[in-house]
Image (cartoon, rainbow, N blue to C red; front, side, top):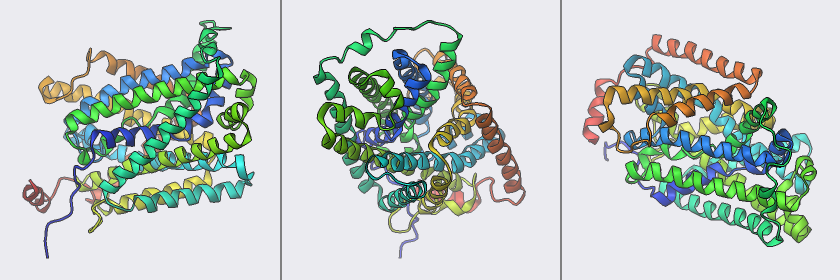
Amino acid sequence: MSNIKPALERKLSLLHATAINMIDMVGIGPFVVLSVVAQIMGGPYFLYAWIAGALLSYLDAMVWSQLGAALPRAGGSFHFLKEGYGEKAGSLMSFLFVWQTMIQAPLVIASAAIGFSQYANYFFHLSFLQEKAVSGLVVILVILLLYRKIESIGKISVFLWVGVLGTMAWIIFGGIAHGNFLEPIKHINDGFTMQHGFVAALGFASVKTIYSYLGYYNVCHLGGEIKNPSRNIPRSMFISITGIAILYLAMNVSVASVLPFQTIVNSKFVVSDYIQTLYGPTAGAFATVLILMVAFASLFSATLGYSRIPYAAAQDRSFFPFFKELHPRLHFPHRSLLVLGGIAFVFSLLFRLKEVIDGILAMRILIQFIGQAIGLLLLFKRKGKGFFPWKMPLYPLPLFLAIIIWGGIFFSTGTKMMLSGLTVISLGLIAYFVAKKFKWIGALSNDGNNEQAKKA
């Protein structure tokens, strides 16, 4: 019997990585927040909120690309923060990231499941309890699908990706074929005035659009399973953001070219109503089925990426050791998957979608996005330009712009959510010092170092 422990395998190509990113990004978000964004902005210039989301995604992806190409390991931000802040501060920052991941990752998973159950009302007119039952069952189904080898998951991801692209293409084609596709663009500035009210509305609306773009970095969490990571990690992110930005803008323009603005604002199933207006009730029902498939695909991708984070941290003795084991036969972090999935199941039963969306951003901005950007500055200063195989254009300008915009987005989540984010960090600080006291975390043991040497 072999004594070699199972290890992650680099089996995911650029196609797989891009597919995983894009199906994570296009979840239920763009379909359920389209009406909300239009309502917040109050005019045809609501398209600017989707452009703002894309610009921030590009800026932040430069940070992720520079770090991801240099540190292509399972866990992504865990390693970025640990390396960026150095031995002492890095240990704390990486622990806090994994700690908040144990809360915000299940929130992300729950948001897709809740959105799925809400959109299912187009068919079933579910009661509140029935909605919760559906969202919980969706989480369970995703966990069952992910309980397999990574190469199988890569193939499933590509299949779901094709479905996502096909759905978006059909939605966009309807607007183009209708004949008024360019009208919303021509009238984008109707009623527009650059004043404080617009800036505030753009901030609140961008909370929703940014939520719809999140996931472009999912490939970094799977860094230990990506082929040729120094090239494929950055490429997959920029391809994903470009493709999704085009799809989102074209979808919004298509819907606005067919439905009156007030209908967009008031509709609970705006894309289904749009397709029904164009092609009739049967087509509207079929579009809803496709949207539910897209939501499920996003849930699948997000759960896959997040399940690698506690595992990677535990392998490094930087998080609770319970999570460090891989499945002995299937070679994936099954304990991490089951715990995150279990918490997501509970969250899907307890919370509503709006609370979850705002909570997701508030909890991750300070440590993951702003903290990670600062960590890149520190790592660059310590290691020098040559350490990074991928270089950020105009460094460090995009990095500083990302920090400023993320700060504005954090403020726009509102006082309650800002406090919740700070509370999670405070509890994480307590957990960190307790874990250090009982030596649950710390430097790798000699045995651990010997095992790593054998693998090398």
